[in-house]
Amino acid sequence: MLITWSFGPVGARAAMPALLSGGGALDAAVDAATAIEADPEIDSVGLGGLPDAEGQVSLDACVMTDPDRCGAVMFLRDFAEPTRLARAVMEETIHVTLAGAGAEAFAESRGFRRTNLLTDHARSVWERWLGDPRAIDRDKYRGWLPPINVEELRGIETGTRLRTGEPPHDTVSILAQDASGALAGACSTSGMAFKVPGRVGDSPIVGQGLYVDQEAGAAAATGTGEIISGVCGSFLIVELMRRGEAPIDAVAEALDRIRRRFRLLPDHQVAFIAMNPAGQWASGALRPGFRHTIADEAGTRVEAPTLVLLDE
Ligand code: ASP
Image (cartoon, rainbow, N blue to C red; front, side, top):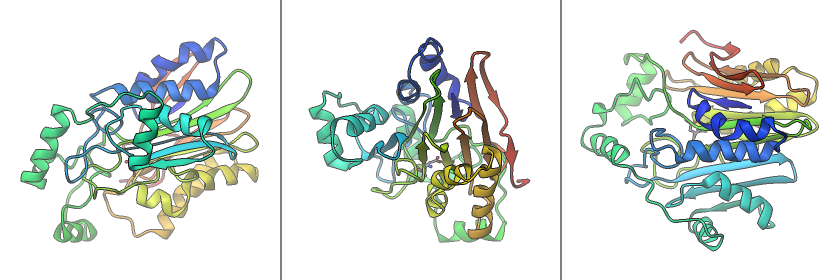
């Protein structure tokens, strides 16, 4: 399994024993995502995720194994297991995506339990942001917080605001390959902290946050959703692998496309993970700070990405 960020071991612990004893790739991806969603300490996914500007947590997730086998939920409030719900959309409806109140009603109909997603910690971070957006440790959340206002946006653009440090938390994207060689992926997030209510990023959108095709490979994303969406990042990487590129070259090309086609701000961060049907894999990030987690027969390791495009 290849998982975004250094919280990956939480997911690997939950999913690897079954995967190593012959379990399926989709089960592994969903189980790993569900464990990370349930961890209240991880404030960018599931329970404990930071809320939108109005203090409400909304979750986005998708799962995929092939072009004709994918499911997603977006703008889901009050339910803590968006990835399991996305799988239910895939397996129990004729649709691919359910959003908002409809997704919540579907969750209820399938026996998912209503949960208050806003932890005391997330509420206190939100209240601090409401009182004084500058009080938030923006270094910690680099690449993940929207600009506070137009002046701040200008400060970012002119480079007058110093940004350093490593964002510790972000979207969990998971690629898994099982003993039969089958690939599967899952992607789950609470999205950008303090977002405009209703905002949905790349993560639950097939082809943007995640894409899987058994014939070509799998790719998934984390980082500023607005940028990943614009290049259909995960689909792009899988299509490049379909044309024969190695995972690392496909990731590099997608990151370079982003570098060339966007007016990048110092806050923007994007990372991709990719795996081909032969089990070769790679990860790459636009800027320093990203880590991936790799788990296999040899154990679970948190590592620097294979490639970082820019120096800072
Ligand atoms: N990609 C996610 C989003 O834009 C969040 C992130 O990974 O930072 O919603």
